[in-house]
Length: 123
Image (cartoon, rainbow, N blue to C red):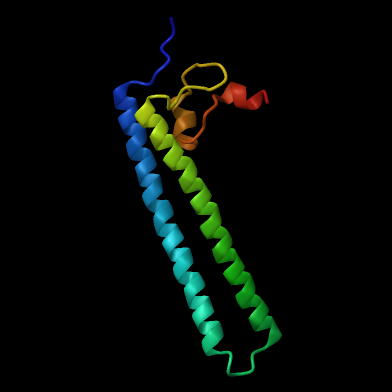
């Protein structure tokens, strides 16, 4: 019978890996929020002065980019949080289609994956 669970040492390794990725994401989210706040602050403080349409457009694009990055990183954060729940449930690292252990290399690259490379490739 094949092993259908990761070892506790592997689960701990991936828990640490995911938590490190979470720290980086939270930092990036905060940086994007600060950038958006700064853009908003500058655009309201400069509203008294006439500004060129291109400058206003550029500010708008930067603001949209900051909001996009916040949303993108929050979505990824949700995936990582689900992976941590799977670690607690000891279902992490097991392909939901074939039931085999997902390779360590794949889990390191995509720690929130729920499918092995073969099952993901054979959509």
